[in-house]
Length: 116
Image (cartoon, rainbow, N blue to C red; front, side, top):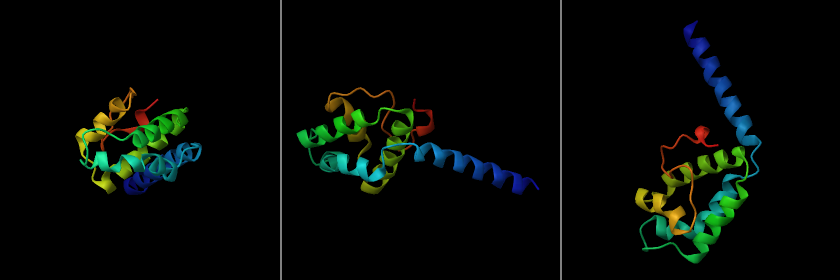
C-alpha cells in the first residue's frame, strides 16, 4: 500500500511539473538554437564567448519573461549542459561575460522549480 501511495505521489508531482512546462512558451529547441553559438566557449575553446553567443544568450534571457519560461529554460539548459559536456566554469561565467546578471547559478544541479 505504501508503494502504491508513493508511486501516486510521484506521478502527481510529475504531472504538475509537466503542466508547468506546458504553459511555457519557450521550448528546448529554441533554447538550443539560441545557445548553439556558445558551444565552443562552453567546451573550453575560447577565453570569451563570441558576439553571436552573447546575442543568443540575451535573446533567450529576454524571451524568458514568465516564471514558467524561466523554469523551462533552466530545465533545457540543464539537459543541454550534460549532453555537450560543458565546463562548469564557462557555464557560470557566460551570463556575466555577456553582460547579464542572473538570479540563479548555471549549474547542472540547480533546482529549476525554485526559479521565480
